Amino acid sequence: MTKKIGFFVNTTKENAPQVVADVSELLKKAGIVPLIPEEQAKALGLPQTGITTAQMVEDADLVLVLGGDGTLLSAAHTPQIENVPILAINIGHLGFLTDASLDELKPTLKATLRGDYRIEHRMMLEVIVNSQSPQPFHAFALNDVVIRHYTRLIELNAYIDGELFIPYNADGLIIATPSGSTGYSLACGGTIVAPQLEAILLTPIAPHSLTVRPFIAHGDAEIRVEMHSTYEHLDLFIDGQRETHTLAREAEIRVRKAKRTIQLIRSQSHSYYKALREKLMLGERIK
Image (cartoon, rainbow, N blue to C red; front, side, top):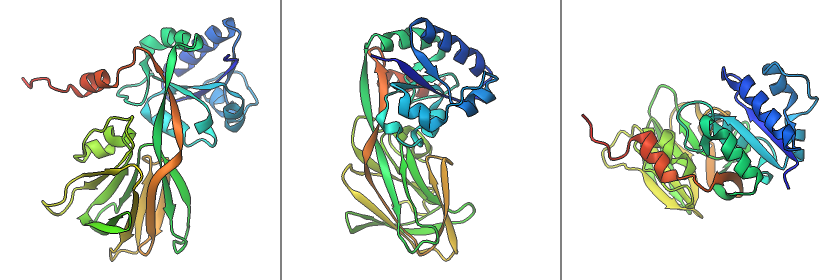
């Protein structure tokens, strides 16, 4: 039984304070405690709560994300969030990860409280940079990992399960999950992959060769990338700019399927294919 619902809100949205107030009132009437982290409550002009984001995630039976895909990606980088189901409502514009629009918020939330939903587990990527890097680290991505230089072509060797696959000469390389296939990867010519699949996409950014194409590796593959550029440093971006790192050219990057997943709550009426068709206007004739 749901007793506490945490909030993760895009506080920059003009309608966010009213949406949060309306949802909080609905929850209280249902005997459910809304948990709004102190920092977000302050940004929304709401009374102080004294709750940290970490406490919210630990105490909540589910987390309500109010924003868009970017807000959900930010939420996905919260420690321990993989342990809590997430209901994401799009109160912005384009969204593929969210379950419903703002107009559908109340019926979707009521259906969720009745238990009328399903859980969709979304694959994540684990990123490991070798210890020779000046700042070694270990991270997770829901959408993608991007290696690039802001102004110049870079040279990369990509290995799949230890075997050399492609030497890239490009502006960069995107390593994406199926969830991320509708993001930066799609904009760079990558294919769309059904989010229920386990796969790892390799999409080059503006490759300097007509023979280089996007590729989909199996979900259990380990991708290793070696950098051979003459530049001293390259940049690594995790889920956009949720995490950014500057890497020495000798760094080695390994990417593989993470053991953790993100639990997305899906209403029974949710259709990924309908969302694709409508948001990308798939199959529509150009007039």
